Length: 247
Image (cartoon, one colour):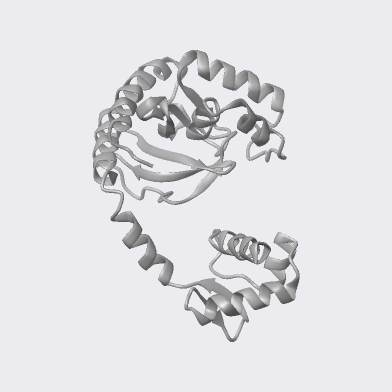
């Protein structure tokens, strides 16, 4: 029973990826699961309305039921509006996008994202995930996790997204040590070409690590001379968020 539940959760997590729908073979090969097991689990989900099947392509996708669930769950986090207001103030002051991310396994998940009011065509990253090792918010979180979790993350294969992505565990350890000393992290075009960001951790009551916040924008607008200035403004916001966020 427990193994079946784990498989079901793996399939749901996989289907929450960037694609619209997935075939049984694709899910089976990606998760190293038996096709018949995948088929049975998907049919069970479909029977309860959690996934839908395209009869023409024979592919499966998550249903709108998850949107309904997300809507109800989001209502329980009454601090979201406060977080958004603080991030909006930060974003407008600095003139760049502001983001709040929380740990999600070996990744960071973007829980809130805003752009300056003057911005147009902003990319929506809400709910997306990215590696802890090559993003500003991710590294700000990883640097303050306990050492066992840090080593667990660094033991996994590290994907190279750009020529600046650090894929050496030893180099990342040095980077994390520097982040702990400075109190902030920098994503120097390590996850996306042409994009830099500065990030700081967010701590709640009892110095519990909650997540991290960042400001991000085109690399030409992020010379080294602004790192300390942005970090100080981020830390002011992080203190405010630490008093209201409850995850």
